[in-house]
Image (cartoon, rainbow, N blue to C red; front, side):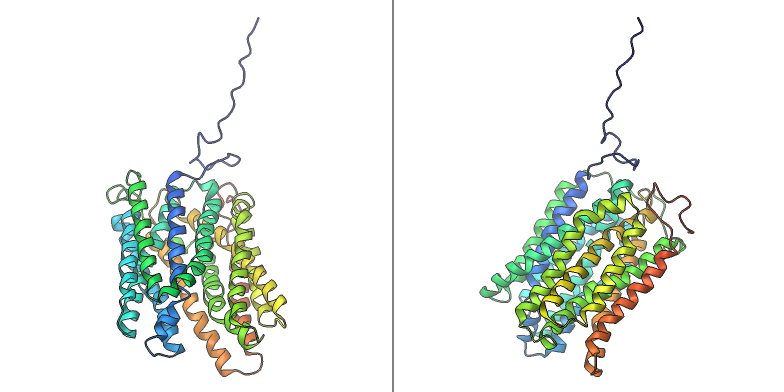
Length: 423
């Protein structure tokens, strides 16, 4: 009698780093550590966000000067991003990540002891240097550690951690402000020290991201990455997203609620919460869809949804409609971001060092976040009829431009990139 061997069950996680389609893969432990640290960082950032303008005005400065304090953080992030990319290629991702967290922790604690407006401005600006270091290096670690087939899911999980922290942080920060405007800065500094300690001890045995362990890896230059149509499109969509989601949304949406709709400051806060809720809802499934349907379909859908919603915001005639559109706009951002970041990770790949490439991608978002509020504010200040509508409509135009770029870009999902567009 011939004995037929029993087929053995295939272990779905046995080959988790191959990126083979159809395999059920878990998020690596190292990335889960980074996700937990991202939550702590976001909680801390949210602590100081609601009190920073008030703290600046406590030094007898006007609205414009207090806004500069907010912009200084983003400005130094933009200026020092290339240096951050260079440091990552020289030292490795993990040391630069921890260094960035420590810089922000020290500078934030210094803000709590600022004696005048100019000290606060300098200390806050120094925090932007640390922020770009840990942001770009975290992207580098995720690119190197994430299995190709679940990059969308990893990006979605990382973004969700930041989003949840950003939602909870302002609530706690508002309560802490009752004990003094300087207290949230000290708590934020402590949270960053906790995050840096967690990353240091949990990832100290990680075989990636240190000097000497990355020196043998080939370096992907920005010029070579720019030759890829997907990377060019990602730069444009990152700029458009920074302009609308991080710039115009934070600067104009609360002002529109009070100046045009006649709502109180509580509606302004609720509107930002509605945007975050829409983003959170989309993040629950957008990463998985980006890993199954492809990066490009999710990016295009997110750009259409977010761009349309930003245009509609300027023409909202009532508070319920305004809040509903905020939810839709947030959902668009939640569809866009994981797929966009996964596409950039696909371009870099697991076996190359791309610190400067990731820094340039981050710079495009920061540039949009800086220019968006300034130019939109000028439109509102110097145009009378329909000025808010026009200011919000520019975000829609930029989203359309990014969409055209992505229509011409290749699909980068490893299982779908063959024959799907020109590089």
